[in-house]
Length: 270
Image (tube, rainbow, N blue to C red):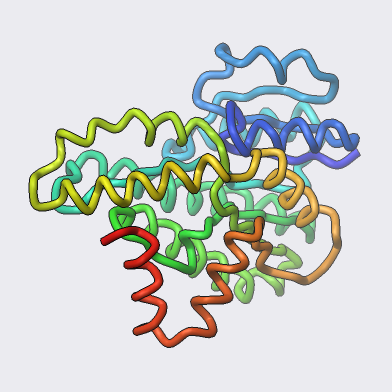
């Protein structure tokens, strides 16, 4: 029986992925900051919840050691833990900037660095990094978030070449709009707190974002893409998940940037 370790498994895409892998006969190491708050996953056979802070090296070391001891090994690492922000960069607090970079970029790097020696010793392993539609396109008021996802794309592609000689495989999954708890966070933004020179355009962007999330995919849809990447035994690197992602990537690749830029302006109402 194979074992998957999933970061950020307490909710959203991570939790849906944990449930799907378990349903298909895998051992699942579901990691999160506070396992004591999780009740659904702990009831399931072959699922264990572990405390993990992807920014803490000791936490990572303890978690990997416990998972290997409990399940006898790890076959697939799914780097799903991440945070989202939509804000004008100018008014984003420095602490918030450091936080999203540490979770989305450094946290992923930390997990990959920690798992490589184990996979290398076994001469086999698969890392699936969760990127986003934001990893190859850009939208207004998400420059910081886009920066972290573009970083994941670049890091993952570099690792694809770097780790092939060790029989360690790298894949990325790129979800589009997914109806997770992020929807509620965006819905509850106080638009009156924004400076006057951003307020009108941000309200237009917020309206577009809300409409997009309302039409978005269920987390289970993305979980199926993650599972496919884990089991298809293909050398495929990139898994765009959802028609919105595929269309955005197609437009970005076919249109001159001058035209693509106009599409984004029109869509976002800026």
